[in-house]
Length: 132
Image 1 (cartoon, one colour):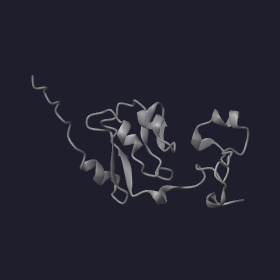
Image 2 (cartoon, rainbow, N blue to C red):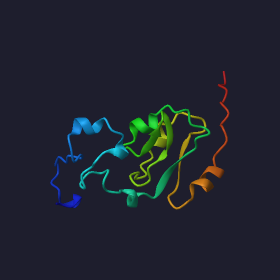
Image 3 (cartoon, rainbow, N blue to C red):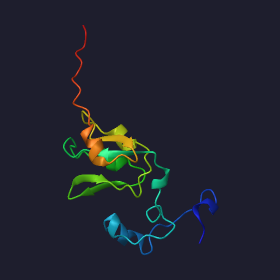
Image 4 (cartoon, helix red, strand yellow):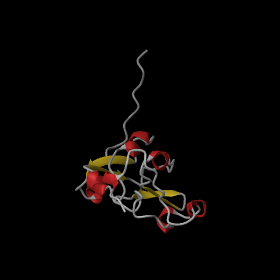
């Protein structure tokens, strides 16, 4: 078994231990992943800032879930439930694609408690009127 730093550029890694088509029907936390897959290995040590989710503002549009390159957005029962910090590397794509005002996902220091981050959430910005 090779470490990811030993793999050749363009290597193909099969993430599932069993039949891929059948495994895809299961929720990602119920699947059986190989050790080499990104799901089986944490990338959290890369992160400096982390996205924090504010469920009071979220409209469950799932833009963040769709664009997250690491499948680190947690959705249960058709609602956004938070961020999987074991697999989130802090890229901020989820925050960039969030359409709410203020955004329901914002980046905070990785070491800041989510409760503290939520207490610092900005207020809704008023729309600026166009000058004619």
